[in-house]
Amino acid sequence: MGLEILEPNTCIRGCCTSRKIPMHLPPPCYSLSQPIARGAESVVYEAILDGKRVAVKKPILSTSEDIDKFHKELQILCTLDHWGIAKLVGAHAKPPNYMLFFEYYESGNLARKLHVDEWSPSIRQALEITARLAKTLQYLHNLGIVHRDVKPANILLDIQLQTHLTDFGLAEYKKNLKLVSTENWKSTGKPTGGFHKRNMVGTLIYMAPEVLRKEIHTEKSDVYSFAITVK
Ligand SMILES: Nc1ncnc2c1ncn2[C@@H]1O[C@H](COP(=O)(O)OP(=O)(O)OP(=O)(O)O)[C@@H](O)[C@H]1O
Ligand SMILES: [Mg+2]
Image 1 (cartoon, rainbow, N blue to C red):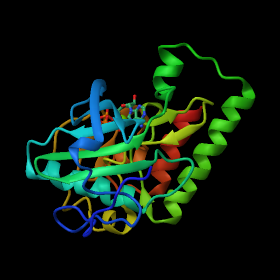
Image 2: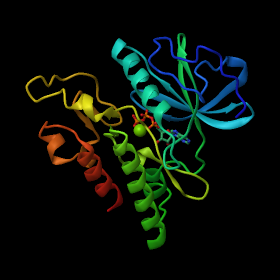
Image 3: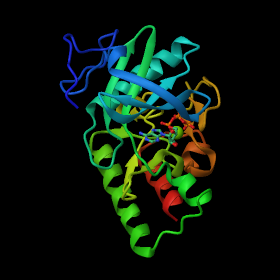
Image 4: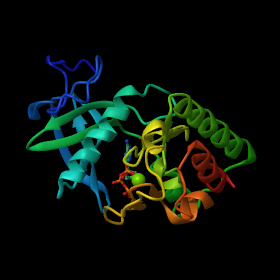
């Protein structure tokens, strides 16, 4: 995108860093237009960045946990580079603006495409979506990352209807999830587009039985949500 990277290219806390993605996009290089989606935790805008159409996710920050969550999402996004994952192209990771800039996916999310636009994919298209999503999850799981909110609303479609997994707001490293046991399980947070209680997160109808039973959330729980998504 030809955007300048200013050193030190880290978030204000120093926990998110990247060699390719600018962390401090200055206001003159972007302009936000209308919101595309409003959730309990963020508003997503269409915008122009460096002359190109992008989507900007602006979290609603009302508690320090919300800020922690923004940093975790950015940290994870900075480590990802895969054709099946929505591409982060920039961020603003210090006050007063916390924002994530993504490539724009013209055909919206899969839930809307299926249930609002009443798209009926051919068998070939359904198989392609399934294979792409499976490979994307395999990539994530090989990195030790569990998405924890796999569902059609978090799968974006480009102009050729190719899938791009998005919304890493609940994603976590598997090694950190092991630290949470049913004994120290504590309810936190607020209901989101999904459902969020520390180690019980996701969206109810896509949640694996072990997540509903408040046991550990592993990559297998993502595979369960994947199966419900593509069935
Ligand atoms: N890069 C993008 N291109 C086009 N549309 C997008 C993009 N990113 C997000 N959207 C739209 O915004 C919606 C919400 O995005 P996302 O799931 O990342 O935000 P969220 O606040 O975590 O939402 P929720 O709480 O509802 O899950 C998507 O379902 C999609 O319709
Ligand atoms: Mg979402």
